[in-house]
Length: 312
Image (cartoon, rainbow, N blue to C red; front, side, top):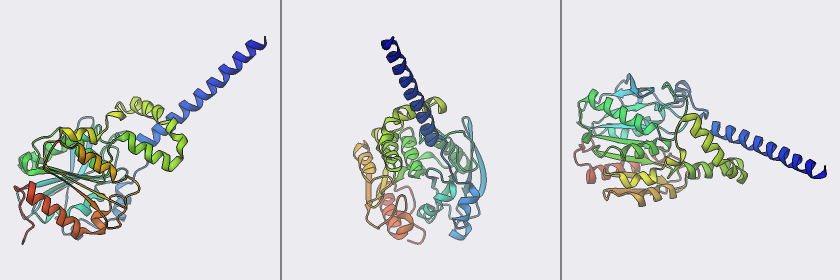
C-alpha cells in the first residue's frame, strides 16, 4: 500500500512538472513568435517624414509573397543612378525604422524599397520567424522591385538591421546574382540570440524552457528555429558583404557579426566594429557621416557598378 502511494505521488509530481514545462514552453513560444510590435502610426510619431529627409514622396505598394502580403514604400530616385536597394527593418519595428539608412544609397541615385516584414506594420502574417520565411519574402520583394524598376538583380542590393540584417544575409545566400548584402547588428543564429536575451531578461532558468519553446514555436509557425542561422548561411553567400556592429551593443554582442564574417565564403567582405558609443543598431544615427564613409568605400571597392555619391 505504501509503495502504491509513493508511485502515485511520483506520477502526480511528474504530471505537475510536465504541465508546468508545457505551459512555460507555450508562454515562451509566444514571446518568440507573437511578440509585441509597433504600429505604423506609432513608428511614424517617432520618425521624420520621408520628404523631410530629402526623399521623394513614397509610393504605397503591396507585394504578394507566398501566403502573406507585404506593405511598403517605393521611392523613385529622380537622379536615376541605375541602382536600387531594399532596406529591411528590425524586430518589432516597421519600414519607418529604415529611413535613417536611406541617405546611404539615395545620394548615389538609387531607387529604394522599404517594406514592413511579415507580422509587422501593415503587412499580413501571424508570426515572426526571425528570417526563416522572411528571407523568402525578401526575394519576392526583390522580384517585385526588379520588375517595377527594370533593374537587373546585379544592380540591386539588400540591407537590413538586426532581425532585418539576419533576413538579408539568409536571402543573400539564396541570391548569388544581387549586387551586395549589408548587415548591421545581425545575430549569428536564433538559438544563440534567444538564449542570450532570455537569460538577460528572465534569468538562467529560462535555458530549461528553450528546447520546449523552440519545439512549440516550430509547430505553431511551421518552421525550424534551429535552421535560422545567418552564420551558417554565410558560407553560401557569393556576393560582396558589408557587416557593421557597434562595440557598445549590449543587446546583440558584436561577436555575432564577427562569427558571421569569419564564416563568409566570399572574399569581397568588410567588417566594421564601430567605437562610437552607439547602442544596438544605432551606429547610423550616432555617426551618419562615418557610416556613409564606410559604405561609400565598400561600394567603390566591391560594387563598382553603383555610381558615386551625386556631386563627388
